[in-house]
Length: 411
Image 1: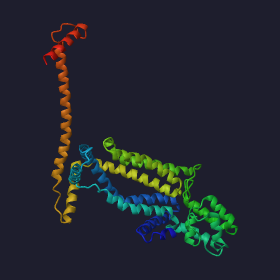
Image 2: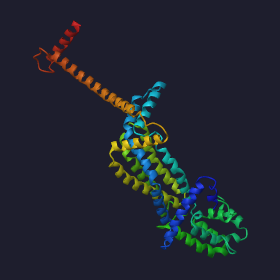
Image 3: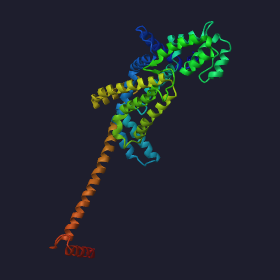
């Protein structure tokens, strides 16, 4: 298929071929049980891919867990240097920040590798979902039945001209079988009907094969091969896409809301976690429902994975978790011929110093407040001494004024 060959020269081509092979294998497996359904294949395919990528997911979660442990210290460090923009302060802040990361055996870019490794896979997955006939032989054969042979569409007079004049080239041209399949893969029910009217001699063949296609792409009354429509049941696809993604993001970020007030980055992430699902829902309206179903299945799998991994990580002893991470980092340094990190002691000192400064600041404020209370108490006793009058009476107030004048005259 043309959309596949466009990526043969890049890393996405081989990855898409492997993923397409898995997708086709699942479809053929379910076909052996009499189930030829793209929707079911998408769901099973998503589950298998998420299991394959589970090691990367666990590594990403370990970094997130470590980040949540470090955040209080990093936040205290940011407060310590808040408003200090001179070069000396910035260098000191970077040094102390580096020490904290090394103390926990990680780095600011510790979670980037997993994301980088996942990106080509995610793009290749998108390619498979967007152009299923390129990877599923059974689906492609249905298109070929309509196009090839002496009585096929491509054998009809002026086929390319008629197709271009009536359907345009938005999804590709009609010069070859593969390019035509790419274009026709996005046809709506109305466009298939129009195709029958344009080529009446092929109407029976078109109708028979389109019924097979719709049977494969039908998922609870939704045609997965076309874009969702607002006034039909297919609108559930973009709605569920937005909802499941919001739940997934909420599950991932739910445990980090404690530091929201002290961490501007967390506030920004919370905003994105609200906006992104809505944007994805609108995007799902303009793409085939098959892709929206894939997003829904992915979000559900991510939510279940996250909940299960949360249970696992919540049972881990924090000190043991940190110690293992430091040992792992030192083992990597050893393989590279580098000595173990000796800066962890400095990190402890820096962290304790930051925390102690904060405690000292609180204690100093408390003492100042106590001194003020004591001063007010002594002043009140001085002004009220030798006064037998009732408190707050006119005589008592006059006596207080006299005492005040007496005290200031002495000064």
